[in-house]
Amino acid sequence: MGGNKKKPSQSNASKSQENKGNKKEETKKIPKTQQKQRLSVLIEDAQGLKTLDSMKAITVQSLARSLGVKISVANNYLRNLENKNIVKMVGGYSGHRIYQKIK
Image (cartoon, rainbow, N blue to C red; front, side, top):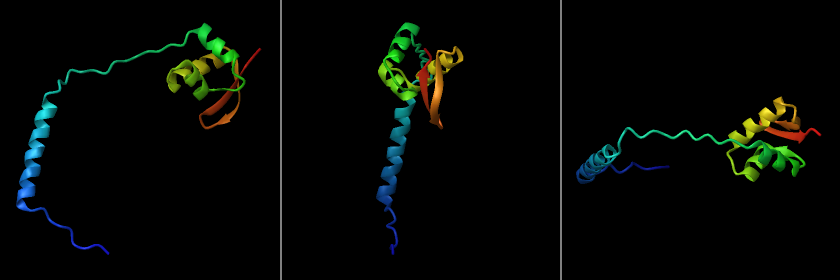
């Protein structure tokens, strides 16, 4: 099906080695002391509960979208509310849980 592959000529091989040297110089310019910031985002109870009141079926994805936070933050918030018996899980599977607010 396929034929023999073309082997790079000597001129192409020398150019690729020169490019590799330039890339190493560029990466050396970036300081290694840069650290990733740890951002902590919290959902205020008043804002979170107000948003939950307007929803029929509460999912992690819909809560995250409506509050403008990451899914992991919304998931932790819903788990905390479940432990406080404010919401209960009524369905779902495999990480796609559906919650309902307890009245």
